Length: 405
Image (cartoon, rainbow, N blue to C red):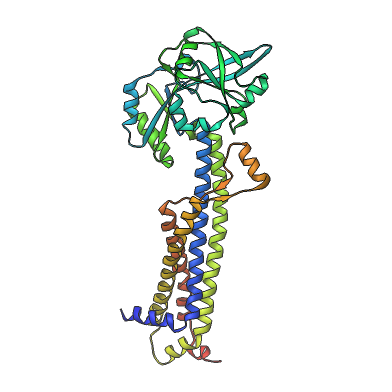
């Protein structure tokens, strides 16, 4: 106990030296937490943007549908099946879809398109489809009308309130055809979706494809996007082999690889940050030893054991590092929460490029408490390891040489 008391007194004997040491730890923790939370926040926002375009976080299909996406691989809508899925605590919503390809025709123009039958209210909760409208009105469940993507209408030289004809292959070889009024126009960030997407109310799509009460997928809303793999595995175990449950990572592996590549680059940046932090802390240790060389030499010369002095120096370093870490964590919490509510916004051409592809031109932070804990502990560990330097110097200290001015 006396070592801690003496270490505490020694810390404040030279306030400027202690302040510099604690400040280096303080700023190291703040920078480390900000870097880590920004990295996670940026990637979480990217994933949210990607899945909110269309796919959702998790989808349920009939087994084999993803390999061969045909209407014949659809399944019957079942309230009991929905109830089984919603029994999972991580699932917050189930959105039904009936998807197939068709030819859209108007006068002399014919283009291929992806037709998606939806429950308008549930789809809007999942992908915020109504917010993507640039003209017209959103669909209602009993409408016999379509909501068309802006790019598809431009390719077909059509406008709002025009009429188009859809022709395709229905369920079990039936002929699918229908004539529909264009009720709304939506703009999608993904150029691919913006050039070929058509939405129909679910009942109208089932009637057109001769697939009464049939669905190609349930799109699931999840409580924690970070647990999609565990959630999809849990749902798969409940539903059995009759269905396939796929997370967005399995459906879009290229996006996953892109995020992993960027994450690896960010880890390199963090490694350089840790090196800078280490040099900063080590610099303060060097300064402390240079200032206290005479003092330590004199204490050894009058008979104080080096082991006790080593424990004293170690206690001083631990106290300084610990206080710096705690202050750094306390200071970083309001900064991270502020940047989460008011994220960094990009401007100019970079922002326009992001928005063209449907991404928000913002860099938010993640408020996950693990960032504060792990980064604080990591900097604490660096500080404790580097605090061994004064101890090693003390062990090799020559009291006669150290007292020479």
